[in-house]
Image (cartoon, rainbow over all chains, first blue to last red; front, side):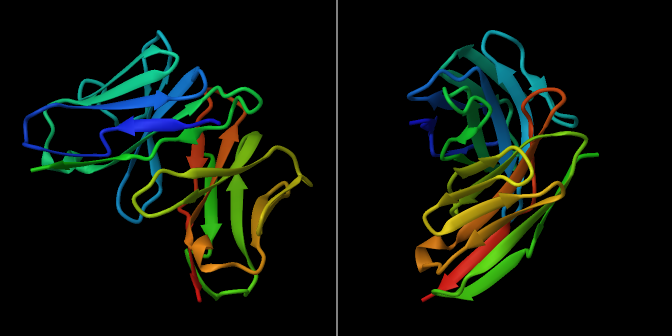
Length: 117
Length: 111
């Protein structure tokens, strides 16, 4: 139980294009979803928190117009990197919480590696 | 400011050599402390949640303990497949369910 998937697992795009990453909770309803970014050999950095049907809460220093988050249902959240640039290249990981019996534990997806050329 | 510090940064052990990883935390109010395992190029895998001092949890060769200031992840007779980065994170009482992560301990078990 408590499985989270992400799609795509990796993506290469040209500078200036937009990229959408999907995060799905497969076997539970996720009341809250989180988006993280991780640079090589560093820990996870929280970008934003989203609750189903409401606007995401962004961490300080994260541009909300650049990283668009939509949490349209209890099983799906999307992160869109708009007008991507090489400095946006990173490993993006989502997590979800709300699984019964362990409501506050975050379960992580496998991550999406983004490379912007 | 809520802070989490893990030590050591990296640890190499021989197969079967038991050891402990440390996670020290300074928070305004602890809601829960979480341990995750992360393999290279993958998302973190949930291991344990600890809520109060004195609590202990076990899973196979791993045992997590919690005091008011720190948590330990004890690994007994490790195997090469236990090699990974182990992440500690705390969730505080106030606000959203955010996790504050430590920098992780890279554990390598040599056969």
